[in-house]
Length: 208
Image (cartoon, rainbow, N blue to C red):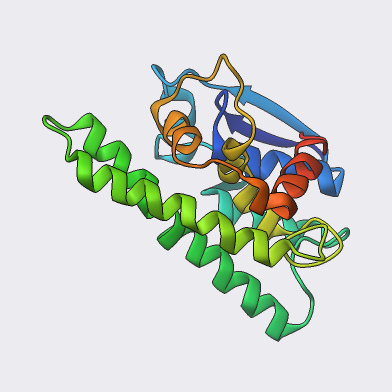
């Protein structure tokens, strides 16, 4: 392990923001290496693959945002991002797996359709409707809670926030297609008060 971590990142990356929230929560010093999407050679050299985030800690090189969150928890257990009780930890692991495998499937599929010749517009509309419907699930989960799994920030918040925030906020300089999809197909209504408060609460937290 090294005293200062190195994080390979790119502007506006949702997966990088997951790690940036976690690093700030744990108060860990980090040196950032910002890559250009047009030139991924630096991150490919260090990790053998082109995607960010990548975390370097001495001889340890960790890619994939969910794996990085787990690594940070082992490296600096306090303040925690994961529950200590096995059953509660399993519940959070299931949530994170569901978010990454199930929740992210519709926006990923919409992006693939929009990049294809002759996008299937009815399919896109249906997938967008599913994204909108799922906002109610998150709102219900947040009723009576400040964060997704209780009174303090957790890995679940780090995982979900960078994607759900587009229901309320998007940097006008951010024109990535995937982020425009998240913006277009998620709209907060008066029925999403708890979710809106959570987005504003997490958005106000520091990032590394």
